[in-house]
Image 1 (cartoon, rainbow, N blue to C red):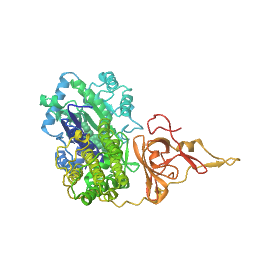
Image 2 (cartoon, rainbow, N blue to C red):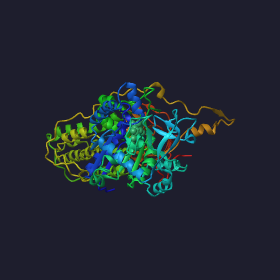
Image 3 (tube, rainbow, N blue to C red):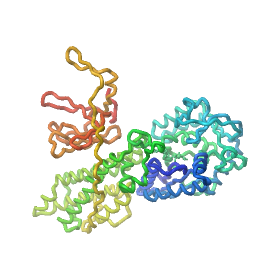
Image 4 (cartoon, rainbow, N blue to C red):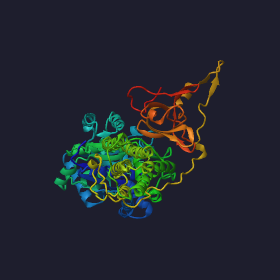
Length: 640
Ligand code: MSP
């Protein structure tokens, strides 16, 4: 989609604690989107910041024996330092304790009060401090917070309320009429589900007698603003609402509010109703991403199982960390973070494929062309195919960016890298170098370098520093990179002197899989009928998850003549499977086939290579055929 501007936001983070991987993820995602839009030459504004008021922050400050402002001043630095480390290019960082924000919140409350949208009443209900949200008795689940399951406090007091209920019907209609407003689709359904129950009016104040750490209400000095109303307002106060009309008109409505799935209700019910009551347009899209889990479990500070992004980036490099987070998570779904998975992907995509391609290519150009990029001759079929793959990846990247499927866009770019490595294997420059006629050799060297130029541009928003190094090694000094230049072949100028060779991504020694990672044998309970057929219970059969997948890439495994290494797309998730079918299929004959896999098989290592699932095949005697699916069902479909 061609946009005339791009305004992207992250949630503003609570300053009650140090930043963790969840914060790092959303901020890197926003940064990558912002950088892509800048490459598309779309005017871009990227906002992040900190949420500094409320009971949580007050409690954290009390614990440390300092004032909430002192506490916020100390903690905010941790976020700012982390963003610097992670190469975040935000245009603004807003703190809710800044006067520019507080003034807007106060004006806005006054306006709503004057319009009769806010009224005073007695409140009797329950409050969850970690979520900073009120609940009615009927909302509680087993007497606890319906969102996080933690204990709630009983609260009875006089307060101010925003008339939410009168907008309920309007909001349902708006959400239905604007499918892009809440993404992904299943999150829209979640909000619509929530809106099936009658909406309570929202308690938008806190009496100072209970909580003084907040923005004072302009019409009643005994109260402060509810922290969520204060926080959500950052998205407009930072771009000039009620303070700089021209700036506000320039950037609002936001293109994307990126959020975690746990703060969906505040962003898709409270926020749109607040905006409607103020008469302000709604943001284009609220996009809720999933959670990073540590292995299979939720990260929890109390259990000590959190990933510290600062330490991780120090250990393995900032840009590899950025790449892993972007490539590994299917946007919207939960993803698992493990050091093993990081190392596996790093070694496969970055060290073996990308880094290796660069170093062998620069070396070959050094050896066979004196370090100067040679001019290509006429392109043959192989070259045309490589050109097509590279140019298509540039288009895929743009489309997947629009559809928020960065993982797929990055997979397409890495497959160009693999294709270029294979191209070199097939064309064998080391053999061509022995020929009298050097033109075929020069064509191969040029084409491989050109494919790498396109790759480096496409990966630039994710790994800006490393890709700049790569481009320097290719002799690219012109830094006016834009996405359009990646949609055309032939950007590299023959005759350019190449830079020094870089070891961009040195291999990391893999952590050996723990013994528990070996798959256990199949069904638990079996019985044998008189005819010798093994019967399993239906419940046991149901445990096996069969799903369709498309084969993306296939490679032979050196030293294992029966095995093939397959990369598959399982409903958007990229996986590697090792299958014992090499005697029956040529790798190229399998690419593109839609097959059936056991999707929930425990990962295993076969000949030291990770296999994540099993492909189904039928065999009789020496014959074997993989099970394929006809037609155009989306991949990941359940086989029943
Ligand atoms: N201050 C509010 C947001 C106000 S926005 C107007 C808040 N702050 S937070 O610091 O608690 O959380 C910020 C974000 O981090 C949320 O979007 C949350 O979903 C995200 N994450 C927290 N843990 C996470 C993971 N383990 N994985 C991914 N994101 C997670 O809520």
